[in-house]
Image (tube, rainbow, N blue to C red; front, top):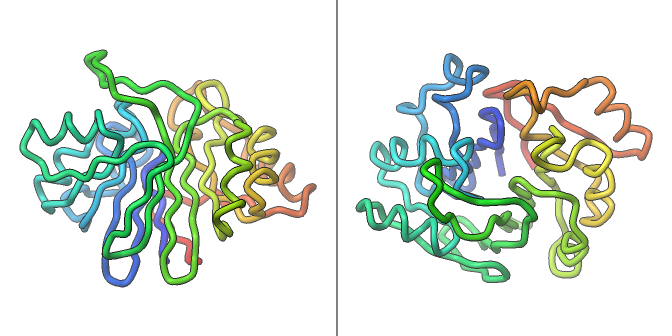
Length: 226
């Protein structure tokens, strides 16, 4: 499983020749828009954790270009289906076996509305299992006790956690989250994009190292494999 970071919460996953884009917000991200051409991205699926613009901005453009199936909660799926896109609706606690692996939609503590203020359902995260590997993509979330449920069913190899604070949990809570999910390999996301979520990379890494954990802060376009 190859995971590429496109800034904010945007990821690309490559699994057995299938391409999955998560929360595409690239053209509106000053840190990413000159480094990533969305017209060149491959996508068989687009996974959306919630409806906020910094997670949905480029969904339509990528789906139009690739024919990708949009996977999200029921309300977000309905929103895009009404615009003519192919979708797969999910809801919390549910899972589905796709042709690249098994996906479960799990709880997140946040809000979810489209840029026009319309309802975007309840926010969530994804647990993806494929080729005997497991990645947990938390989405935008506060630290929550629900994270303790994940290792009861899944052995997580990599957790993608927001660390920018202010709108989501920060570094200190992300360290605790890694304990809750029993995963010591963390990919940080949702940081530096705006002034409210700028972080000190050195301090963040040191806090994880103190707990004998790995925090990966990838450059935009850089990849990690599990």
